[in-house]
Length: 353
Image (spheres, rainbow, N blue to C red):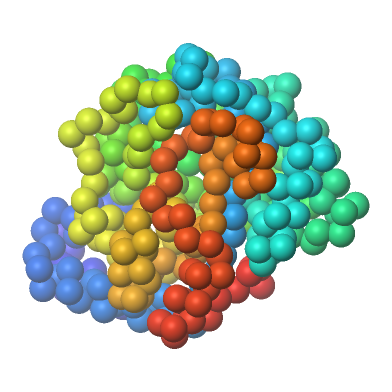
């Protein structure tokens, strides 16, 4: 069995950690090991990203869903939700608001519904943005697709696709999902199909609070390394959102699996040690105080959302009413977050290189 000292040395050299090594670290690391790991994570982050922080905004374009996921405000059984799918003019109004705020990277997001969020709809929205002269860097976080559909996205100008497995524990996954999303393997293979389709950047993630975070983090690392083996590249980003309440829902799935601030910091640190090149996303699900603290420590976060809304029409269509996918805790506009990060010595970037 490898010693923790050898794992420290391997990580510090930038060689990454396997899922098994990460599990060993989680099992045996003491306070001094975590202190050293924090220092190594800071050094790796500086070495790979040089103080750059990449900003984006989510643009939700449909809340119609065929799934009934226990933790999601868009679940089909949520009768309190006022659903909406943006028409082209509404979509452009939302996008222009974000453009004028200073955003240059958009994450297109929608609930799963073949009539409102398929590849053709996303391509149409991307085309409308080009025609309107808004040259965003475009990412998409939508339901799993086939290789031909991912090719449609690539040809439409989508540069990165994100898809979170939510949890890698099959029993927990089955209990939390109802509908097409029940198909664990189809979801897990989605980013492989995106890479096969020629989309060069993909992102993975887990929803913290559904399952033991240690199991899911190690499984995520294994998934990332498998992509590296099969396709020659690690995922471009990792995301670690925590469960948040949502309008119209009772108690969420995963009670008793809550992840503390300290545990989330350790997740970020270990992810950086395991895959030094991966960007790590911290969204507005987190409080301003936590986001500022993690950024100041420099332990691995490289991608931030700012000034976000999680409902279709949430930026400009005030009559849209309740309808967010989940609760947001950081409501600061982009300009304020940019100023704060500059003051801390970071280099804000509005588009990836």
